[in-house]
Length: 97
Image (cartoon, rainbow, N blue to C red; front, side):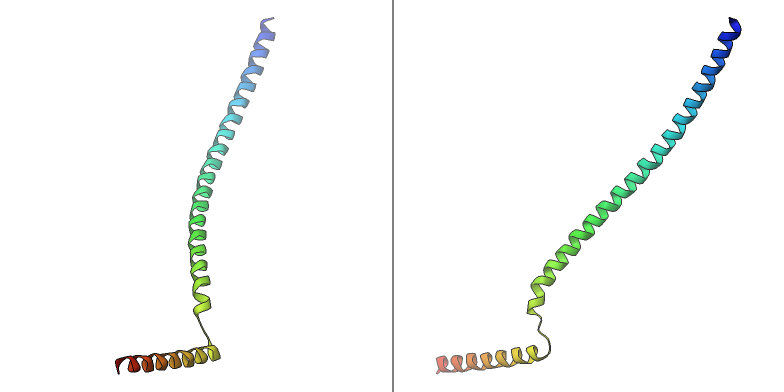
């Protein structure tokens, strides 16, 4: 009977040791994953800030882009503006006479 109890006790001790080792391993893995999670959350926050900044820049570009004129359009725009300035100058001259 004593031998059987000793055998069971050793078996329980062995299982307890195995469970403790597994627990420590799982705890270590959890700590690593928690650390990785914090890093990923930090990365997400940085990327969200960058996205917000890029969206802001995109909106500014959408507003500015129609105002930018290139090539022949630029020359036509200058000609129209020059003509308008001349007309304004004529109006001012007539008002001051």
